[in-house]
Each structure stands twice: as C-alpha cells, then as structure tokens.
Image (cartoon, rainbow, N blue to C red; front, side, top):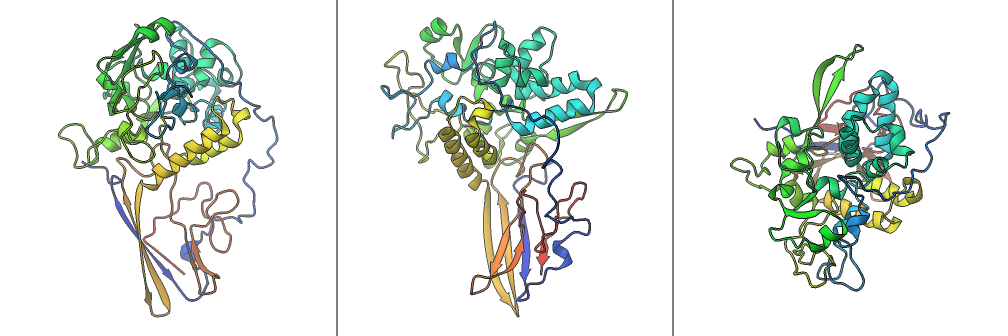
Length: 445
C-alpha cells in the first residue's frame, strides 16, 4: 500500500473578489489577535548562555572531525577536494556548516530536549536514550558502552571527551563506522545502528589508500557498499516515539518521523523491484554534482599528494529544507560554538534553498469569472517522501497576494505576523495552539 502523501498532486482554487472583504473561510473563531506576543516573549528565567566552542576529543572508538580535517579539507596549494571550477567540495568543509554537524547545537532541539526532561523528571534517562543517539550519537554511543546516557547538562556545559563528541552532532567517525549489521530492519530504527569495534572507516571506494589515515588517525579506510545505502540513513530518519503513562508503562509506539518508510513506499525507492524514479537518499542530500550540476571528479584527500581523482563524489552538505536555522547560525556563530564561519552557514543556507526550490513543482493559472478572479494553484511533490517530512510540526502553506492595477492589495491568503504565525487579512491568528485548521480546496473572499 502506498502512502497517500507520496508524490501527491494538490490543487487549490482561490477565488478573488473585486471586493476586499475577508470571509469566514479565511479566519478562525478561536483565533486571537496577532498583536498578542507569544508566551515566550518576555518570559522570566535564566537564558541558556553560549554553548562551548567545539573542542578536540578522542576515545577508543571515536575522534572529533579535526582528525579528518588533516586530509579531507580544501587547501590553497592543492586541487584535491575541489570541483572543476576550484570550489570547495571537501567532506569536512561542507559538513561543518550542515544541520548534521549542528544536530546537538540546534536551539529548537535543545529546547524540546530540556522541556521533555522537565515534564517527566522521573523519565529523564528514557528521554536521553530516545533523543541523543541521533542528535549526539558519538557521545551517546560512548556513554552507552559505560552504561550511562548523555543528559542536557552534558550537552551544554561539560568539557569531557564524550561531551565534545556529543556536541559535534552527527560526525564523521560515527557515520563512517556504522556497520551493515541489521540495516533496514526495525531494531535499527530510532538510533539502533551498530558501530564497529575495529576502527574501520567505511567508504564507497573499493581501493582506498589507507597509509596516511592509519598513521595519523588510527582508523582503517575500508570499502563498504552500505555507506551509500538508504538503509543507513533510516537508522535515524525512522523514529518511533513511545507514549508512556504516569507509571512509566509504554502505551503505544508512534511513528513520529518516517522519511525512510515514506521513500520506501514511493516511486523513488530503489529497494525491491525499484520505483519508476528510483534514487537514494544520498543522491539527493549528498549530491554528486557541483553547483552547476556537473559530476564532481576530484581527489578526496589532499594527503598523500598525487592521489587519483575519484568519481562519483558526494558533497557532504546534507542539503535539505532547514535554511531558516542555518541562517540563524550564521547570525549567531559564537553563541552556537560552531567551527564553521558565518559565510559558511550563509552559503549552506543558499544551497539548501536551491534544493528546496526543486522539492515541489508549482503551477499557477488564473481567469476572470464575472467580477472575480479565479486562481488555480497546483502543487506536485517531487521528492521521495512527504513534503514537508520529518519532525511533525514542520509545515508548508501557500501564500498568495492579489493586487489591483495600482498595486493595492485586494486579497491575501497565507500571510504571517512578525512571529511567523499565520493570520487572516484582518490580523487574527489562525494557527492558535490546540486549534486544528481544516484542509481547504477552496479559499474565497
């Protein structure tokens, strides 16, 4: 059975009257005035200070990205890790300003993490076990080996090696040490990946040159076809959340985030007999083309010098949809404790917006119907999962404005206030907490 949300076509008709009145179809009885600030504005209490600057750490299993940066960055005196036009396509250089790198420093994640722990203090360890294996996986895995968990204070304050590894988010030595064991099965979901114990660094090339990596980093580059398999992504992009009663008993498991399962049931799947438009997660989110959509061919390490060029090369930008947060990081590099620069984050946001612009095909047509204008907006999903997907509070909507010949606005649907909240034309809030907005195929005025 296909998920109904996969590759859908959504048609919305907007009827714009020559009158500028706003009907009840575009408002909510329960909506409050948009001038009322959100509850968090002016809230009392201590604010979380700047996060610790990303430090260096190494354990028996993991190392922070500095050990990888010795070879897998672009250098002025080398053509390695650069595309045909000399642009930086290095794994470390593109990963550092990505949402993968910032997974444990994401302020929305930290706020939710803290709130969940505060809501049920007796279940704090369970919250830790549910959240950190994917947002702070190296640190969480390291602590799990010691029979412990990564808590909120560890993430935002501690300086121990496991804390440094945790704050690095989804890092190099975590992803590339995940083995093929159990991938694609239910136990592997919700952070159930298996990390190897032999310091093998899996990659997509069958003939890796391991001399420098073994000598300087004490990792062994090893061919592993599974590193490009969507099943590997599924370990953290398929999340089932437990609903727990006051006694700590699990009532039900909820499919909170299931991009992988959505993809698996779409025409983009490469599993089984494959879909009509089969492609993997990595092909889209670690694109093998440069900014001009030309295949990347380059040596993937600057040392030892003279390594042969590789192709394909996946750009480790993990481009998705969260340009908003990347721009927030660009404006708050010091507070985030990031290694990437403001310019790096801005560039990552621009590439993310470019990716996002291809996610949905938009077609708009209009006609006069008597004194009215009828506009048909048709949206066709072009990605292998729901749009938007992942964390369920993400949203997408149509914002349409109509003006007369003089440029005066006569109609608007999908407008927002200063806080990003949807409003009616009269300024009333539509997305009041606890109010479910009905789906509409027709919006009129």
